[in-house]
Image (cartoon, rainbow, N blue to C red; front, top):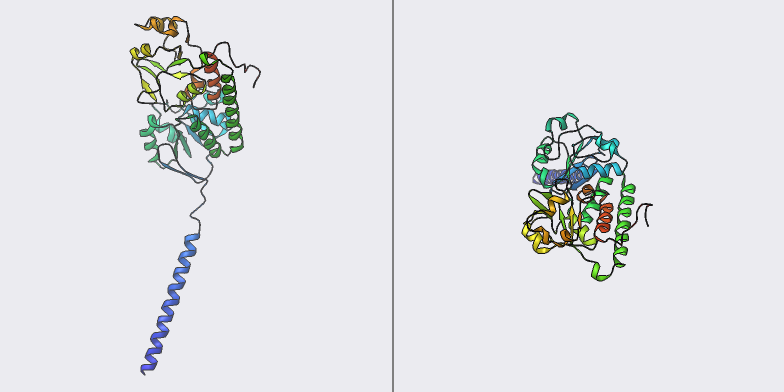
Length: 319
């Protein structure tokens, strides 16, 4: 009888062990099964995880540079709406509007039922959080360097399934940057590094500093940025500091000031750029201030402005 009881217990233990093995095996198999198709999973420039289950078809752009990039990739068909500052090219500017860059229209955005909202960085952080809370994917892109700009183009190429075109765009930008470097090597050393003050706002007076892609463009073109050490990449600057650092060129990237107004600023008559008439107001601000494929064209414009006599001729394409 005891022997039968012992055999029964052994049998039960065997069944239990086999059951446990089967459960563990099934559990492992389930863990190998995919949770679902994911088209793209990435951490954006606000350090938020973005998951796209499929390629987006209804994109809303709150960022002019992203809208430009999508247009350059030939995928305007994916854009449902943009903010008013998205004014280039024409097929982007004619799209429906969902408010402005600084004041996007929440209800209008929701009405388009977007499957992706592309925003910029810090200025729109609070608003993007509000949109994310609805479950709509939001991609924040904020470029601080030229490399960031190129990486953003490649990322948007992935999002729009236009990676080959994105690679071509970046290669074209790099070719233009190389042309600038080669042109710079032909300039005599004593003329190569003019001091440059880039003004992006007159009230308050603001310029660019290290940590911005505009600063990198100034350096790439052979200029010395007088605002390099200011505390933020886009920063206020004291007019007295502009006088003290005595720029050779003043580059005005806004439409609020005329040459006469700048010449007549208190104390600025002693600045080299003012005395020599090197106040440049005819550059296209969007080429230098937007992190878009046109940044390389802006770099060539800046090079030509601060190196008269050594201009790069792009009238017939690449030199």
